[in-house]
Amino acid sequence: MDVRRRPAAAEEPKRPRPAAAAPGDLVLRPPNLGVVLAAMALFLAPFSYLAFVHYPLDADLRRSILICGAISLGGFFVVLRLIPVAARYLLRRGMFGKDINKKGLPMGEITVPESLGIVVGIVYLVIAILFQHFNFTADSIWLVEYNAALASVCFMILLGFIDDVLDIPWRVKLLLPTIAALPLLMAYAGGTSIIIPKPLASYVGVAVLELGWVYKLFMLLLAVFCTNSINIHAGLNGLEVGQTVVISAAVLIHNVMRIGSSKDLETQQAHAFSIYLLLPFLTTSLALLGFNWYPSSVFVGDTYTYFAGMTLAVVGILGHFSETLLLFFLPQVLNFLCSVPQLFHFVPCPRHRLPRFDTRTGLLTGTKDGNLVNIFLRMFGKCSEKSLCIRLLVFQALSCLFCFWLRYVLTGWYK
Ligand code: UD1
Ligand code: MG
Image (cartoon, rainbow, N blue to C red; front, side):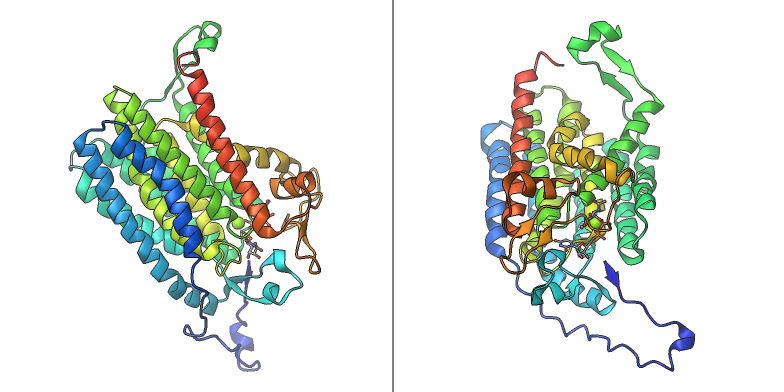
């Protein structure tokens, strides 16, 4: 991201002040509501069907999901309304980026407001905090973890925004989620044992293995992985938010399926907890998708990628389904593995590992950089930025379907 430098105080009288754009200058293109409504129907319909028709869920749980859904819908409209306002202020403070995949076209010269994830993050936190009033009693055992989860998400939003402002070096970036995960790690009072998969139990010698602090280390690594893996699977209009929307929808479906099929109260509560944290996340992200879809009128910034990764990590950890979450993250895992040589500088790593744009044809060509964006272009041929984003999102959705299939096949045999 380019942040306009302010002249040093001593130089100020000599230079003419940069003409700061008034907040009223920018008129944002309206959000692509067609895409948003289609995504909403596609991703929320299966969840709603399972929760309200297919499974005979408890009436109280249904009421809580309904309340959460209603506030989340309100959050969707608030984000839609606030993004144009925040975009004007961010642009005025010099927080913008150039659209690299349109370089050479007039569109590539436009300054696109950056870090709009901050709007989603703040609205999300307000909803999640308000929701406590409807669902938890003061003595609820889940309240401590719920607040710790929100503290970690809030900390991550702050650090992501700092990263957008200061453009922190890559290696330091890796550390940010470690700091943000601290509230969760310190407050976590749940189990630290894992059930050994049945085929491995005879080798390990026990069915349940107590991991102690190693479990907390795993929680930390999961937070670091989820945040950074979303941040490096990025750089195409709509990809950052798109992948998060697909994963969140898959997690919501997984949650409701587990609630419907489990008799264990604690399992049900853990998955309900995940639903309460993810519903507002999904709706507010969908509003951002409207503005970030091709051609993007705003960029989400590291504020959003870190916020999204931390929210998903937190629900995976506290909902006790981190293995399933990692399966939903299959494209991100592949992208990370392909990126390892460049991330650890065995191979030179440019600031942006994005494709080459041909101004004549309007198509993208894959470079040698090791990430899924370029690998898809090399494997399936040149295409437009929008088609590439859709292909990658379809791959994300197929990975989630694969995960559901795998869980179905392995149930009973694996655990
Ligand atoms: C990560 C990736 C980098 C990729 C970048 C794109 C690694 C190690 N880093 O870096 O390769 O280029 O994300 O987000 O894999 N941008 C676009 N179109 C978009 C979204 C972003 O052109 O649809 C550009 C804009 O110039 C924007 C910038 O990317 O300002 C944001 O990049 P930033 O999030 O700061 O990059 P990193 O997260 O450091
Ligand atoms: Mg980024």
